[in-house]
Amino acid sequence: MTENSPTKSTSKPVEKTGSTDPQGAVLQVERRDFIELVPTDRPRVQSMDGFDDDYTDIVDYIVRCTHKIWDERNVGLIYTHYTHNCVLYGTMGTMYDREAVIHDTIQRLVSFPERRGMATQVVWNGDDKEGFYTSHLVTGAGRYTQNGHLGPAKGQTYVSRTVADCMIHANKIYREWVVSDQMAILRQLGIDPHPYAEKIARKKLAAGVTNLDIGEMRGRIGQYPPEEQADTLLAHTETEAEFLQLLHDIWNRKMFGRIDEAYSTTAMYHGPNMVDTYNRVSIMHQSLALIGSLPDAAFVPQHIATTPCEEGGYKIAVRWILEGHHLGYGLLESLGEPTGKRIQILGISHYWIKDGKIVEEWRVYDELSLLVQLKLAQLQDGTLTPAEPREVEPEPIKGAAEAFEADV
Picture 1 (tube, rainbow, N blue to C red):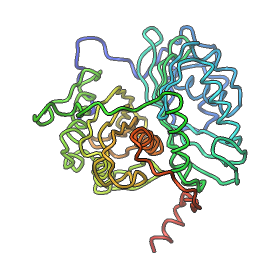
Picture 2: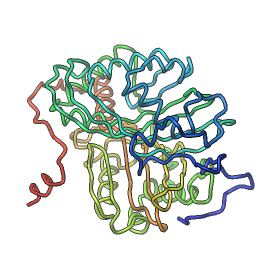
Picture 3: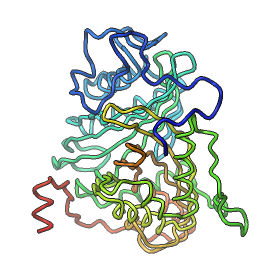
Picture 4: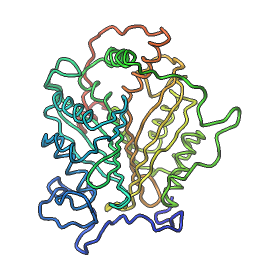
């Protein structure tokens, strides 16, 4: 991966500084306190035709409007920030209109009235003429203090990660993909995921939702091995094309040794269930163990975007699908013994690349969604054994000191 690779095509590359004002450029999230991300006196530094006057650039837009809706509880702003026919793809299903988004937002705020979503980083591309695309990594924290969709509230605290990818034009989001690590929340609240997932699966089946197995994965055709070359049509630059080839090699060609080549020796990894680890050996295990649960899985990228990073290097965001059959043992321990059922993972990953090496990765998907898919399939073929309610100890996120003491 080269730091300044030429663009793939002869068309002009997307301008990523976004600067139309010599005094400023598009905001970056990582080094700034919240009040610096939503200033009241900052001039507009990027062309934002059709956007509300208080938004100065696309990062300011996505951070500020998310805060207004979720943290300031101005849910009604969804009427002016989403189209009436917006489509929101989530790990538990799809919403097809603005009213469904409003209803879902209210329900989540009822259950977690103290929840705060803190912007971790935003990777973006596009412009106000063709439309913007943002990939917004959020760290959410709060307490479960109101009886709601998760059952009786006991006041436990939680921390989880979410990535929301949005397509935006003229102040309105018209398509969104949300990947929220709900399994991390359940485990921290001490909620047994099996009866909870079964309840969701039964509701879906009653509503006519099915998840049918339609045969082998696209990763290989017949008895041929996976294709050598990745499909790089999504890439905007040579750097992105090279990165898509790397992901293809790791996930489709099962060349996990490429992790050793591509990641720095001190790389940090932040994964589902609030796993935080470091070094490329640990990262290789996390990746290999995920494929261990779905050994025939095919990896399909759906979008890629790149933003230069003030900390050096650049950030890459990739939205992807990993689809396979539950044929083995691995990272997805909640799925239990291999069932052979088809599983689809919607995931979004952010990477920090510096001096040609990946130095940090954030990988977000929801294991609870996979458990629901499994139980839905078992309901249809009559193999589901109803889960018995049981006491589950909460799994709090360890602070640095606690983690050290536990290791000692």
